[in-house]
Image (tube, rainbow, N blue to C red):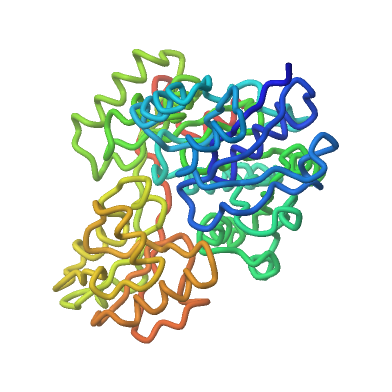
Length: 440
């Protein structure tokens, strides 16, 4: 009998799991995807152009809130969990519900979804979103460029729009962000690489993405999203750990997989963390992945005009995923505001509009800061209106993309950035990234 499958996802890894394991497998019939985490990615279809010959009508995508009823109406035998940055307790809760509804439950495999490249692959992953993957990727790309190697970045998928149009996306200039109608979240991940002259690929079908990237790369850098595993089999596996969230390297999925399989564990933000929290991650690395090299680093906040912050009523805008499902209470913007003497942090919640208000309701842990969320055009407008309604004297934009370039902000703003700086001493016990890449 054909096994009827439901894939639980969030518009990314779920599609990759389907493409690699199920699309052409007649022993399984994927009846439906569910979607969560990202607004407005349900009530559409995985299109027949991408689903293959076994799915001439494509596959429906429904909200995860209908999970149990879908198991019954679609006669589901097996549920596959295929999204990231969630605790193992979160997964266990859903497993209990699925099994109570009469279906089996499993996590998607690891090796089965990693595509083999013809070119060397360096994977940069993390234990949680917001740990510092992209600054690490930029640092690696700089080292490779200095050695005359052409590095191409392949980003984790964010196919929130027309899936057929997004099957393979090639970004070379900032103008390409408009060409592909990128959301704020996509701009956050692509823009810093493009400003450095790096070629960036993303999409829906990563076998086709890989084939395109291989044509233009000496080395492929996998810049993972959230804390997901690499979609390409890495020749060098780097995992970024976050001592501001100690213990999450063991309690979050699939970050623990990255932590236990890494060749290199890079502990970021050590300057902002308690020494005992840094030490706890080192101890966990030695216990659960003793083969891994350990590097310590910090995120350097770059502010062009720090004196502009002093004594101002400041609205801080932080990277969206880091402070929403990433669970962080603050980011680089908050650190800059407090370091350089802001008089007051404006709480944006009383001024929130539309989708921004929904975000605050969904993530009540967020304090007096504004997450840069804009998965749709209307969501970006809601973000713009929320900013402009606040009584701030200065807006600190601490996202990887300069929101002031495409939002009409009616008050002065300061755009800050951050880069990775290693603090480990260059010796055999604690090599630098440069030394590791020399060997690689």
